[in-house]
Image (cartoon, rainbow, N blue to C red; front, side, top):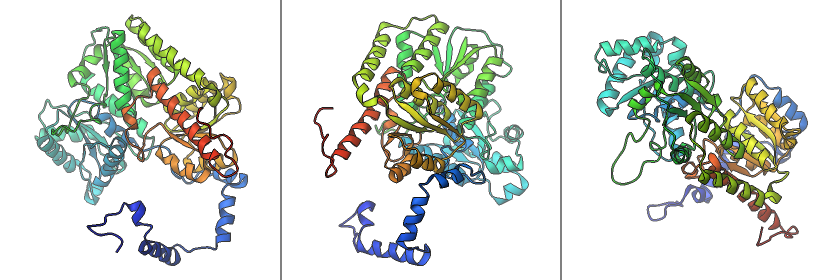
Amino acid sequence: MPQSAEKVLDHAKLFHEPEYQEMFARKREQFECPNSADAVAEQTAYLKSWEYREKNLAREAAVINPAKACQPLGAVFAAAGFEGTLSVVHGSQGCVSYYRSHLSRHFKEPCSAVSTSMTEDAAVFGGLNNMIDGLANAYKLYQPKMLAVSTTCMAEVIGDDLHAFIETARQKGSVPQDFSVPFAHTPAFVGSHVDGYDVAVKGVLDHFWKGKTRVANGKINIIPGFDGFCVGNNRELKRILDVMGVEYTLIQDASEQFDTPSDGEYRMYDGGTKLADVADALNAKATISLQHWCTRKTLDYAADAGQETASFNYPLGVGATDDLLMKISELSGKAIPDSITKERGRLVDAIADSQAYLHGKKYAIFGDPDFVYAMARFVLETGGEPTHVLATNGTTAWAEDMKKLLASSPFGKGCQVWAGKDLWHLRSILFTEPVDLLVGSSYGKFLEKDTGIPLVRLTFPIFDRHHHHRFPVIGYQGALRVLTSILDKVFDKLDADASKPGKDVSFDLTR
Protein backbone atom coordinates (compact mmCIF):
# COMPACT_ATOMS: atom_id res chain seq x y z
CA MET A 1 0.00 0.00 0.00
CA PRO A 2 1.26 3.55 -0.70
CA GLN A 3 0.40 4.71 2.80
CA SER A 4 1.25 3.34 6.23
CA ALA A 5 1.85 4.54 9.76
CA GLU A 6 5.47 5.15 8.82
CA LYS A 7 4.62 6.81 5.52
CA VAL A 8 1.66 9.21 5.73
CA LEU A 9 0.91 11.01 2.48
CA ASP A 10 -1.13 14.14 1.92
CA HIS A 11 -4.22 13.40 -0.18
CA ALA A 12 -2.80 15.37 -3.11
CA LYS A 13 0.08 12.88 -3.30
CA LEU A 14 -1.82 9.81 -2.14
CA PHE A 15 -4.39 9.89 -4.92
CA HIS A 16 -1.67 9.96 -7.57
CA GLU A 17 -0.39 6.56 -6.44
CA PRO A 18 -0.97 3.71 -8.95
CA GLU A 19 -3.58 1.95 -6.80
CA TYR A 20 -5.82 5.01 -6.73
CA GLN A 21 -5.30 5.84 -10.38
CA GLU A 22 -6.40 2.31 -11.29
CA MET A 23 -9.46 2.68 -9.03
CA PHE A 24 -10.42 5.98 -10.69
CA ALA A 25 -10.08 4.41 -14.14
CA ARG A 26 -12.36 1.48 -13.19
CA LYS A 27 -14.89 3.91 -11.73
CA ARG A 28 -15.00 5.95 -14.93
CA GLU A 29 -15.41 2.82 -17.03
CA GLN A 30 -18.10 1.16 -14.92
CA PHE A 31 -20.16 4.03 -13.52
CA GLU A 32 -19.59 7.25 -15.47
CA CYS A 33 -20.66 6.17 -18.97
CA PRO A 34 -17.43 7.43 -20.56
CA ASN A 35 -17.57 8.98 -24.02
CA SER A 36 -14.79 9.20 -26.54
CA ALA A 37 -12.20 11.93 -26.23
CA ASP A 38 -13.54 13.53 -29.43
CA ALA A 39 -17.10 13.62 -28.05
CA VAL A 40 -15.91 15.18 -24.81
CA ALA A 41 -13.87 17.79 -26.70
CA GLU A 42 -16.84 18.64 -28.92
CA GLN A 43 -19.18 19.10 -25.97
CA THR A 44 -16.57 21.10 -24.07
CA ALA A 45 -16.22 23.50 -26.98
CA TYR A 46 -20.00 23.86 -27.27
CA LEU A 47 -20.30 24.81 -23.60
CA LYS A 48 -18.05 27.79 -24.33
CA SER A 49 -20.11 29.06 -27.27
CA TRP A 50 -22.52 31.97 -27.65
CA GLU A 51 -25.22 29.51 -28.68
CA TYR A 52 -24.97 27.67 -25.36
CA ARG A 53 -24.71 30.97 -23.47
CA GLU A 54 -28.09 32.10 -24.79
CA LYS A 55 -29.69 28.80 -23.75
CA ASN A 56 -27.98 28.96 -20.38
CA LEU A 57 -29.08 32.54 -19.65
CA ALA A 58 -32.66 31.64 -20.61
CA ARG A 59 -32.68 28.85 -18.00
CA GLU A 60 -35.38 29.27 -15.33
CA ALA A 61 -36.18 25.79 -13.98
CA ALA A 62 -32.86 25.11 -12.25
CA VAL A 63 -30.20 26.93 -10.26
CA ILE A 64 -26.62 25.71 -10.64
CA ASN A 65 -24.07 26.80 -8.04
CA PRO A 66 -25.78 29.96 -6.71
CA ALA A 67 -23.56 32.60 -5.13
CA LYS A 68 -25.61 32.67 -1.94
CA ALA A 69 -26.60 30.57 1.07
CA CYS A 70 -29.92 30.12 2.87
CA GLN A 71 -31.58 32.32 5.50
CA PRO A 72 -30.74 30.30 8.64
CA LEU A 73 -27.00 30.61 7.95
CA GLY A 74 -27.36 34.38 8.23
CA ALA A 75 -29.30 33.99 11.49
CA VAL A 76 -26.62 31.73 13.00
CA PHE A 77 -23.94 34.26 12.06
CA ALA A 78 -26.02 37.08 13.54
CA ALA A 79 -26.38 35.26 16.88
CA ALA A 80 -22.59 34.91 17.13
CA GLY A 81 -22.31 38.68 17.42
CA PHE A 82 -24.13 39.00 20.76
CA GLU A 83 -22.74 38.45 24.23
CA GLY A 84 -22.96 34.86 25.47
CA THR A 85 -25.49 33.91 22.81
CA LEU A 86 -26.13 30.41 21.54
CA SER A 87 -27.98 29.92 18.27
CA VAL A 88 -30.89 27.44 18.46
CA VAL A 89 -32.13 26.35 15.05
CA HIS A 90 -35.60 24.82 15.05
CA GLY A 91 -35.14 22.09 12.48
CA SER A 92 -33.10 19.02 11.65
CA GLN A 93 -29.57 18.25 12.79
CA GLY A 94 -28.26 18.01 9.23
CA CYS A 95 -29.20 21.59 8.42
CA VAL A 96 -27.43 22.94 11.50
CA SER A 97 -24.31 20.90 10.69
CA TYR A 98 -24.16 22.74 7.37
CA TYR A 99 -24.37 26.20 8.99
CA ARG A 100 -21.71 25.33 11.56
CA SER A 101 -19.33 23.79 9.05
CA HIS A 102 -19.78 26.62 6.55
CA LEU A 103 -18.82 29.26 9.12
CA SER A 104 -16.09 27.14 10.71
CA ARG A 105 -14.43 26.43 7.38
CA HIS A 106 -14.28 30.13 6.58
CA PHE A 107 -13.16 31.48 9.95
CA LYS A 108 -11.12 28.40 10.98
CA GLU A 109 -12.83 28.71 14.36
CA PRO A 110 -15.58 26.64 16.04
CA CYS A 111 -19.11 27.86 15.37
CA SER A 112 -21.52 27.03 18.19
CA ALA A 113 -25.13 26.28 17.27
CA VAL A 114 -27.62 23.64 18.37
CA SER A 115 -30.64 22.03 16.77
CA THR A 116 -34.06 21.05 18.10
CA SER A 117 -33.47 17.81 16.17
CA MET A 118 -36.74 17.64 14.27
CA THR A 119 -37.30 14.31 12.49
CA GLU A 120 -40.18 12.64 10.62
CA ASP A 121 -42.55 12.57 13.59
CA ALA A 122 -42.07 16.31 14.22
CA ALA A 123 -42.71 16.97 10.52
CA VAL A 124 -46.12 15.34 10.94
CA PHE A 125 -47.17 16.37 14.44
CA GLY A 126 -45.23 19.65 14.83
CA GLY A 127 -42.07 20.49 16.71
CA LEU A 128 -43.42 21.80 20.02
CA ASN A 129 -41.88 19.03 22.12
CA ASN A 130 -38.59 19.46 20.28
CA MET A 131 -38.61 23.15 21.23
CA ILE A 132 -39.42 22.41 24.88
CA ASP A 133 -36.64 19.85 25.20
CA GLY A 134 -34.21 21.75 22.98
CA LEU A 135 -34.37 25.01 24.95
CA ALA A 136 -34.11 23.12 28.25
CA ASN A 137 -31.04 21.19 27.13
CA ALA A 138 -29.33 24.20 25.57
CA TYR A 139 -29.92 26.34 28.66
CA LYS A 140 -28.71 23.69 31.09
CA LEU A 141 -25.75 22.28 29.16
CA TYR A 142 -24.21 25.39 27.60
CA GLN A 143 -25.17 28.10 30.12
CA PRO A 144 -25.69 30.94 27.63
CA LYS A 145 -26.80 34.46 28.45
CA MET A 146 -29.24 34.37 25.55
CA LEU A 147 -30.71 31.77 23.18
CA ALA A 148 -31.46 33.06 19.68
CA VAL A 149 -33.98 30.90 17.80
CA SER A 150 -34.34 30.60 14.04
CA THR A 151 -35.95 28.05 11.72
CA THR A 152 -35.23 25.72 8.81
CA CYS A 153 -37.44 24.61 5.90
CA MET A 154 -39.12 21.82 7.85
CA ALA A 155 -40.41 24.05 10.65
CA GLU A 156 -41.58 26.68 8.17
CA VAL A 157 -43.37 24.29 5.83
CA ILE A 158 -45.49 22.87 8.66
CA GLY A 159 -46.05 26.34 10.12
CA ASP A 160 -44.55 26.07 13.61
CA ASP A 161 -45.25 29.23 15.64
CA LEU A 162 -41.99 30.21 17.35
CA HIS A 163 -43.52 32.77 19.70
CA ALA A 164 -46.15 30.32 20.96
CA PHE A 165 -43.64 27.47 21.22
CA ILE A 166 -41.12 29.56 23.19
CA GLU A 167 -43.78 30.80 25.61
CA THR A 168 -45.02 27.24 26.13
CA ALA A 169 -41.43 26.15 26.78
CA ARG A 170 -41.15 28.89 29.42
CA GLN A 171 -44.30 27.63 31.10
CA LYS A 172 -42.84 24.12 31.10
CA GLY A 173 -39.71 25.43 32.83
CA SER A 174 -37.27 25.01 29.95
CA VAL A 175 -35.83 28.46 30.65
CA PRO A 176 -36.54 31.04 33.39
CA GLN A 177 -39.41 33.45 32.76
CA ASP A 178 -37.07 36.44 32.43
CA PHE A 179 -34.48 34.70 30.22
CA SER A 180 -33.91 36.25 26.77
CA VAL A 181 -35.03 34.09 23.84
CA PRO A 182 -35.40 36.30 20.74
CA PHE A 183 -36.53 34.56 17.58
CA ALA A 184 -36.81 34.96 13.82
CA HIS A 185 -38.62 32.98 11.14
CA THR A 186 -35.98 32.17 8.52
CA PRO A 187 -37.43 29.92 5.79
CA ALA A 188 -34.54 28.57 3.77
CA PHE A 189 -36.57 28.23 0.57
CA VAL A 190 -36.90 32.01 0.04
CA GLY A 191 -34.39 34.85 0.20
CA SER A 192 -30.81 34.20 1.24
CA HIS A 193 -28.42 34.46 4.17
CA VAL A 194 -28.54 38.28 4.06
CA ASP A 195 -32.30 38.16 4.68
CA GLY A 196 -31.79 35.71 7.54
CA TYR A 197 -29.24 38.05 9.07
CA ASP A 198 -31.65 40.96 8.77
CA VAL A 199 -34.64 39.34 10.46
CA ALA A 200 -32.44 37.78 13.16
CA VAL A 201 -30.91 41.13 14.16
CA LYS A 202 -34.36 42.75 14.04
CA GLY A 203 -35.66 39.95 16.27
CA VAL A 204 -32.98 40.66 18.89
CA LEU A 205 -33.70 44.40 18.85
CA ASP A 206 -37.44 43.78 19.07
CA HIS A 207 -36.93 41.51 22.08
CA PHE A 208 -35.06 44.22 24.00
CA TRP A 209 -36.83 47.32 22.68
CA LYS A 210 -40.47 46.33 22.45
CA GLY A 211 -42.67 48.19 24.91
CA LYS A 212 -39.81 50.40 26.16
CA THR A 213 -39.79 54.20 26.13
CA ARG A 214 -36.98 55.79 24.15
CA VAL A 215 -34.86 58.50 25.81
CA ALA A 216 -32.34 59.80 23.26
CA ASN A 217 -28.74 59.69 24.49
CA GLY A 218 -26.82 60.98 21.44
CA LYS A 219 -25.05 57.69 20.65
CA ILE A 220 -24.89 56.07 17.23
CA ASN A 221 -25.73 52.44 16.55
CA ILE A 222 -23.77 50.75 13.76
CA ILE A 223 -24.78 47.40 12.25
CA PRO A 224 -21.97 45.77 10.23
CA GLY A 225 -24.17 43.35 8.23
CA PHE A 226 -23.30 39.79 7.16
CA ASP A 227 -19.55 40.04 6.72
CA GLY A 228 -17.02 37.25 6.34
CA PHE A 229 -14.30 39.81 7.08
CA CYS A 230 -15.92 40.92 10.35
CA VAL A 231 -12.82 40.07 12.39
CA GLY A 232 -10.61 42.58 10.61
CA ASN A 233 -13.36 44.98 9.53
CA ASN A 234 -15.05 45.45 12.91
CA ARG A 235 -11.73 46.14 14.58
CA GLU A 236 -10.80 48.66 11.91
CA LEU A 237 -14.18 50.33 12.24
CA LYS A 238 -13.82 50.59 16.03
CA ARG A 239 -10.32 52.01 15.62
CA ILE A 240 -11.61 54.75 13.33
CA LEU A 241 -14.56 55.58 15.60
CA ASP A 242 -12.32 55.70 18.66
CA VAL A 243 -9.89 58.04 16.89
CA MET A 244 -12.83 60.30 16.03
CA GLY A 245 -14.13 60.18 19.62
CA VAL A 246 -17.57 58.97 18.59
CA GLU A 247 -19.91 57.39 21.15
CA TYR A 248 -21.30 54.30 19.48
CA THR A 249 -22.71 50.82 19.91
CA LEU A 250 -21.62 48.20 17.39
CA ILE A 251 -24.65 45.95 17.13
CA GLN A 252 -23.81 42.31 16.29
CA ASP A 253 -20.04 42.30 16.72
CA ALA A 254 -18.71 38.81 15.92
CA SER A 255 -15.04 39.85 15.68
CA GLU A 256 -13.98 38.16 18.94
CA GLN A 257 -16.19 35.08 18.59
CA PHE A 258 -14.51 34.14 15.33
CA ASP A 259 -10.95 34.97 16.40
CA THR A 260 -10.41 33.38 19.81
CA PRO A 261 -6.80 32.91 20.95
CA SER A 262 -5.06 29.63 21.75
CA ASP A 263 -3.99 30.27 25.33
CA GLY A 264 -5.21 27.17 27.17
CA GLU A 265 -8.71 28.51 27.83
CA TYR A 266 -11.70 27.28 25.84
CA ARG A 267 -14.17 30.03 25.02
CA MET A 268 -17.53 28.87 23.81
CA TYR A 269 -18.63 32.51 23.83
CA ASP A 270 -16.30 35.43 23.37
CA GLY A 271 -16.93 39.11 22.83
CA GLY A 272 -20.15 40.15 21.16
CA THR A 273 -22.35 43.17 21.77
CA LYS A 274 -23.27 43.23 25.47
CA LEU A 275 -26.94 42.58 26.04
CA ALA A 276 -27.22 45.67 28.24
CA ASP A 277 -25.86 47.72 25.34
CA VAL A 278 -28.40 46.17 22.97
CA ALA A 279 -31.19 47.27 25.28
CA ASP A 280 -29.69 50.77 25.62
CA ALA A 281 -29.31 51.01 21.84
CA LEU A 282 -33.00 51.96 21.72
CA ASN A 283 -31.96 55.37 23.08
CA ALA A 284 -29.44 56.09 20.33
CA LYS A 285 -29.77 59.13 18.15
CA ALA A 286 -29.36 57.12 14.96
CA THR A 287 -28.76 53.63 13.57
CA ILE A 288 -26.39 53.21 10.64
CA SER A 289 -26.04 50.07 8.53
CA LEU A 290 -22.83 49.33 6.67
CA GLN A 291 -24.74 47.02 4.30
CA HIS A 292 -28.10 48.25 3.06
CA TRP A 293 -29.30 44.99 1.53
CA CYS A 294 -28.51 43.11 4.77
CA THR A 295 -30.56 45.31 7.07
CA ARG A 296 -33.63 46.77 5.38
CA LYS A 297 -36.16 45.43 7.90
CA THR A 298 -33.89 46.25 10.85
CA LEU A 299 -33.47 49.85 9.71
CA ASP A 300 -37.22 50.21 9.23
CA TYR A 301 -37.67 48.97 12.79
CA ALA A 302 -35.12 51.48 14.11
CA ALA A 303 -36.86 54.27 12.20
CA ASP A 304 -40.22 53.26 13.67
CA ALA A 305 -38.58 53.51 17.11
CA GLY A 306 -37.86 57.20 16.42
CA GLN A 307 -34.22 57.03 15.34
CA GLU A 308 -32.53 58.59 12.35
CA THR A 309 -31.29 55.91 9.95
CA ALA A 310 -28.76 55.68 7.16
CA SER A 311 -27.36 52.82 5.13
CA PHE A 312 -24.31 52.24 2.97
CA ASN A 313 -23.09 49.58 0.57
CA TYR A 314 -20.00 48.25 2.36
CA PRO A 315 -17.53 51.13 2.89
CA LEU A 316 -14.72 49.82 0.68
CA GLY A 317 -12.63 52.33 -1.24
CA VAL A 318 -12.15 56.09 -1.25
CA GLY A 319 -15.63 57.44 -1.98
CA ALA A 320 -17.49 54.83 0.06
CA THR A 321 -15.34 55.50 3.12
CA ASP A 322 -15.70 59.25 2.59
CA ASP A 323 -19.49 58.92 2.61
CA LEU A 324 -19.53 56.86 5.81
CA LEU A 325 -17.15 59.11 7.74
CA MET A 326 -18.92 62.31 6.71
CA LYS A 327 -22.24 60.86 7.83
CA ILE A 328 -20.82 59.76 11.16
CA SER A 329 -19.25 63.20 11.58
CA GLU A 330 -22.59 64.85 10.81
CA LEU A 331 -24.54 62.70 13.26
CA SER A 332 -21.98 62.78 16.07
CA GLY A 333 -20.72 66.33 15.70
CA LYS A 334 -17.16 64.98 15.75
CA ALA A 335 -14.64 66.18 13.19
CA ILE A 336 -12.70 63.76 11.01
CA PRO A 337 -9.14 63.99 12.42
CA ASP A 338 -6.06 64.72 10.36
CA SER A 339 -4.68 61.23 10.98
CA ILE A 340 -7.64 59.70 9.14
CA THR A 341 -7.37 62.27 6.36
CA LYS A 342 -3.72 61.24 5.90
CA GLU A 343 -4.81 57.62 5.56
CA ARG A 344 -7.07 58.71 2.76
CA GLY A 345 -4.23 60.52 1.03
CA ARG A 346 -1.99 57.47 1.29
CA LEU A 347 -4.66 55.33 -0.36
CA VAL A 348 -5.06 57.82 -3.21
CA ASP A 349 -1.28 57.92 -3.58
CA ALA A 350 -1.10 54.11 -3.73
CA ILE A 351 -3.74 54.00 -6.46
CA ALA A 352 -1.84 56.63 -8.43
CA ASP A 353 1.46 54.73 -7.98
CA SER A 354 -0.07 51.62 -9.57
CA GLN A 355 -2.25 53.30 -12.18
CA ALA A 356 -0.35 51.89 -15.11
CA TYR A 357 -1.28 48.36 -14.10
CA LEU A 358 -4.87 49.13 -13.05
CA HIS A 359 -6.19 51.35 -15.82
CA GLY A 360 -8.46 49.57 -18.27
CA LYS A 361 -8.44 46.21 -16.48
CA LYS A 362 -11.72 44.36 -16.93
CA TYR A 363 -13.33 42.63 -13.93
CA ALA A 364 -16.10 40.15 -13.23
CA ILE A 365 -17.40 40.55 -9.66
CA PHE A 366 -19.79 38.23 -7.85
CA GLY A 367 -21.12 37.92 -4.30
CA ASP A 368 -23.67 39.56 -2.03
CA PRO A 369 -25.35 42.75 -3.32
CA ASP A 370 -23.54 45.19 -1.01
CA PHE A 371 -20.11 43.67 -1.63
CA VAL A 372 -20.57 43.65 -5.40
CA TYR A 373 -21.68 47.30 -5.35
CA ALA A 374 -18.73 48.33 -3.19
CA MET A 375 -16.18 46.38 -5.18
CA ALA A 376 -17.47 47.77 -8.47
CA ARG A 377 -17.30 51.30 -7.08
CA PHE A 378 -13.68 50.79 -6.00
CA VAL A 379 -12.75 49.30 -9.38
CA LEU A 380 -14.16 52.41 -11.07
CA GLU A 381 -12.00 54.57 -8.78
CA THR A 382 -8.89 52.75 -10.00
CA GLY A 383 -9.75 53.21 -13.67
CA GLY A 384 -10.85 49.62 -14.05
CA GLU A 385 -14.01 48.36 -15.75
CA PRO A 386 -16.41 46.19 -13.72
CA THR A 387 -17.53 44.47 -16.92
CA HIS A 388 -19.79 41.87 -15.29
CA VAL A 389 -21.34 42.27 -11.83
CA LEU A 390 -23.43 39.38 -10.55
CA ALA A 391 -25.44 38.78 -7.37
CA THR A 392 -27.59 35.66 -7.19
CA ASN A 393 -29.47 37.30 -4.31
CA GLY A 394 -29.60 40.68 -6.04
CA THR A 395 -33.04 42.19 -6.60
CA THR A 396 -34.40 44.34 -9.41
CA ALA A 397 -33.92 47.39 -7.16
CA TRP A 398 -30.28 46.39 -6.58
CA ALA A 399 -29.77 46.05 -10.33
CA GLU A 400 -31.10 49.57 -10.85
CA ASP A 401 -28.71 50.91 -8.19
CA MET A 402 -25.83 49.14 -9.92
CA LYS A 403 -26.75 50.60 -13.31
CA LYS A 404 -26.78 54.11 -11.83
CA LEU A 405 -23.34 53.54 -10.33
CA LEU A 406 -21.92 52.27 -13.62
CA ALA A 407 -23.47 55.18 -15.52
CA SER A 408 -21.75 57.64 -13.17
CA SER A 409 -18.29 56.82 -14.55
CA PRO A 410 -16.87 56.60 -18.08
CA PHE A 411 -15.29 53.31 -17.00
CA GLY A 412 -18.75 51.82 -16.42
CA LYS A 413 -19.79 52.15 -20.05
CA GLY A 414 -20.85 48.79 -21.49
CA CYS A 415 -20.66 47.01 -18.13
CA GLN A 416 -23.45 44.50 -17.47
CA VAL A 417 -25.49 43.75 -14.34
CA TRP A 418 -26.67 40.19 -13.68
CA ALA A 419 -29.23 40.02 -10.86
CA GLY A 420 -30.49 36.57 -9.89
CA LYS A 421 -27.96 34.69 -12.02
CA ASP A 422 -25.73 31.89 -10.71
CA LEU A 423 -22.12 30.87 -11.25
CA TRP A 424 -22.92 28.51 -14.12
CA HIS A 425 -24.43 31.51 -15.88
CA LEU A 426 -21.23 33.41 -15.11
CA ARG A 427 -19.16 30.62 -16.66
CA SER A 428 -20.91 31.12 -20.01
CA ILE A 429 -20.54 34.89 -19.71
CA LEU A 430 -16.80 34.66 -19.05
CA PHE A 431 -16.15 32.33 -21.99
CA THR A 432 -18.00 34.59 -24.41
CA GLU A 433 -16.97 37.96 -22.94
CA PRO A 434 -13.73 37.34 -21.04
CA VAL A 435 -12.21 39.70 -18.48
CA ASP A 436 -8.81 40.17 -16.85
CA LEU A 437 -9.73 39.44 -13.23
CA LEU A 438 -12.45 37.62 -11.32
CA VAL A 439 -13.39 38.85 -7.82
CA GLY A 440 -15.50 36.84 -5.40
CA SER A 441 -15.41 33.87 -3.03
CA SER A 442 -13.64 30.49 -3.12
CA TYR A 443 -16.40 29.12 -5.32
CA GLY A 444 -14.85 31.15 -8.11
CA LYS A 445 -11.86 28.81 -8.21
CA PHE A 446 -13.80 26.48 -10.52
CA LEU A 447 -14.37 29.39 -12.89
CA GLU A 448 -10.67 30.23 -12.65
CA LYS A 449 -9.77 26.63 -13.49
CA ASP A 450 -12.11 26.49 -16.49
CA THR A 451 -11.50 29.95 -17.95
CA GLY A 452 -7.95 30.74 -16.81
CA ILE A 453 -9.08 34.09 -15.39
CA PRO A 454 -7.25 34.84 -12.10
CA LEU A 455 -9.47 34.88 -9.00
CA VAL A 456 -9.09 37.46 -6.22
CA ARG A 457 -10.77 36.11 -3.07
CA LEU A 458 -12.37 39.02 -1.24
CA THR A 459 -15.71 37.86 0.13
CA PHE A 460 -17.41 35.07 2.08
CA PRO A 461 -16.86 32.17 1.92
CA ILE A 462 -13.12 31.67 1.60
CA PHE A 463 -12.43 28.01 2.35
CA ASP A 464 -9.21 27.32 0.45
CA ARG A 465 -7.08 30.17 1.80
CA HIS A 466 -6.34 30.95 5.43
CA HIS A 467 -6.63 34.08 7.59
CA HIS A 468 -7.87 36.56 5.00
CA HIS A 469 -10.73 37.48 7.35
CA ARG A 470 -8.31 38.68 10.03
CA PHE A 471 -7.41 41.74 7.96
CA PRO A 472 -9.77 44.61 7.08
CA VAL A 473 -11.05 45.39 3.60
CA ILE A 474 -13.19 48.39 4.61
CA GLY A 475 -12.00 51.93 5.24
CA TYR A 476 -8.92 53.50 3.72
CA GLN A 477 -6.57 50.96 5.31
CA GLY A 478 -8.72 48.06 4.17
CA ALA A 479 -8.82 49.38 0.62
CA LEU A 480 -5.01 49.33 0.58
CA ARG A 481 -5.16 45.60 1.26
CA VAL A 482 -7.73 45.11 -1.49
CA LEU A 483 -5.56 47.12 -3.85
CA THR A 484 -2.54 44.98 -2.98
CA SER A 485 -4.49 41.76 -3.50
CA ILE A 486 -5.56 42.89 -6.97
CA LEU A 487 -2.06 44.03 -7.94
CA ASP A 488 -0.48 40.78 -6.74
CA LYS A 489 -2.77 38.86 -9.10
CA VAL A 490 -1.94 41.21 -11.97
CA PHE A 491 1.80 40.78 -11.42
CA ASP A 492 1.54 37.01 -10.89
CA LYS A 493 -0.29 36.72 -14.21
CA LEU A 494 2.33 38.87 -15.97
CA ASP A 495 5.13 36.70 -14.61
CA ALA A 496 3.29 33.45 -15.37
CA ASP A 497 2.65 34.51 -18.96
CA ALA A 498 6.26 35.67 -19.37
CA SER A 499 7.49 32.27 -18.18
CA LYS A 500 5.97 30.49 -21.18
CA PRO A 501 8.39 29.56 -23.98
CA GLY A 502 8.45 32.22 -26.66
CA LYS A 503 6.69 34.79 -24.50
CA ASP A 504 9.44 35.60 -22.00
CA VAL A 505 9.80 39.22 -23.02
CA SER A 506 8.44 40.88 -19.89
CA PHE A 507 9.84 38.94 -16.95
CA ASP A 508 10.94 42.16 -15.30
CA LEU A 509 12.48 42.47 -11.85
CA THR A 510 10.91 45.87 -11.32
CA ARG A 511 7.22 46.41 -11.92
